[in-house]
Image 1 (cartoon, rainbow over the protein chains, first blue to last red):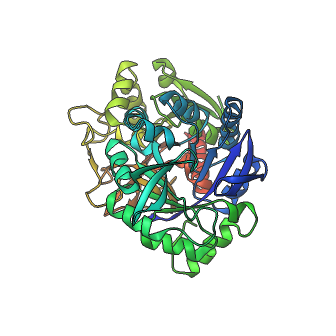
Image 2 (cartoon, rainbow over the protein chains, first blue to last red; image 1 turned 90 degrees about the horizontal axis):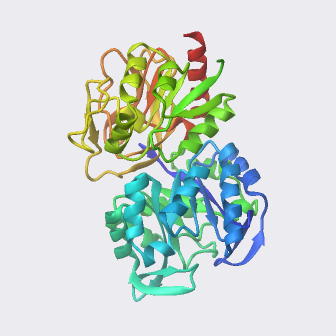
Length: 250
Length: 202
C-alpha cells in the first residue's frame, strides 16, 4: 500500500532558500543543500525545489543548487520553476532532478507536457497547477499568481494528464501562506478528475491539515514555512500523523 | 578494481541520482555504452526510467542486451533498477511486440484500472524466503507496469498496490529492483552497500 509523502519545499532564488506569504515579501532562509540534507535526515519522503529566480543568472545558480542537493539527497527530488522547453527539463534532470514540474509554460504551450512525457516518461513529468476560487469553481492562475487565466483548473488537470503529466502539484492560491489548511474541496474535486498522484500545497500549519488533505484525496502533502521557520520538524510531524492514525514511512 | 561500478547509459533520465548514491557509498563510478566494458565490469548497474520499448531499443542499438543477459546467467554482480528489471522479462504490455532480454520467462503487466497510476511514492516491501540482500522496509517506486510473480530459481521481495507485485528479485550477486534503491533513503543506501559487498565476495 502506498504511504503518504511529506514533502518540504524549498523556494530558491539565486542559489538561496527564500520563502514568503502569497509568493511575495520573500525572506532568505538559508543554504539549500544544508536544508535538503537536514530534511532528508528528519525523514522527509521527497523534496521539491522551486526556482523562483527572475533572471537568467539566477537560473544558472539553480542548476548548481540541484547538483549540490543531489549529492546529499537519498530521496526523490522534484525541481520546477522556469522550465519552458524540453532542454530546460533535460538540464535539470542531468543535474540531479528525478522529476521536473512545469507550470506557466505548460498553460501557454500544453504540448510541452506531451514532449516531456514522451522524452522522459510520465513518472518524470509533473504539472504544477496554481488554482484560485472563482465562480463556484477554481481557475488556473499563472506567472506566480499575477495572471488569472479564467480557465477551469480541474479541466486543465484532466487535459494535462491526458497529455502525459504523471503527477499534479496542486497549490491553492487562496490558502497559500495563510496557515489555515489546504483547500480540501479543491483536492476532492481534483481527485475525482484524475487518476495520477496529487501533491497538496498551500495552507498547512499542522498535522491536522495534512490529515484533512490526505482524506480529501491527496497522496502527498507539501509545506514550506512550517519547516523553514522551525515551527515543526518532519520527524515530529510524522509522529503526530501516526498518532492521528495515518501510517507513514518509517 | 575494488568498488568499481560501471553504470550502463540506457538513456535513463535520473542517472545523476544513481551516480550520487554510489558515490555516497564510496564507489568509483564509470558510465558506459561500450559492450566490452559491460562484459568485463566487476559490477554493473542497469538503470532505466522511461518506456520499455525505448530502453530495449537503446540496448539493441548498442548491442548491450546479450552482454547483460550473459552476466546474469553467469551470476556476475549486476544491479538492475526499475525498467532495468522489467527489460529482463520477455515482453511488456507497455510496448507489445518489443522483445525484452528474456532472462526471465515473464510478461510485464500494467497496474489495474482504478489504482493510482503511475505508482509514485513509498510502498512497504516484504522480503521473501531465501532473500539475502533484500530486507523488509519502505521503498520508493515510480512505475506503471510490474512483474506479477517471483520466477522459479529466484528469491525476492513483494509489495502491494491493488494486489501483490514483485518489488525486487535476487540470485547471488544479481539484484533487480522495481523500486529505486538510490531514492529509498537510508534503507536503499544500505541495500546498495550490501550489493557492493556481495560483489566483493563473488
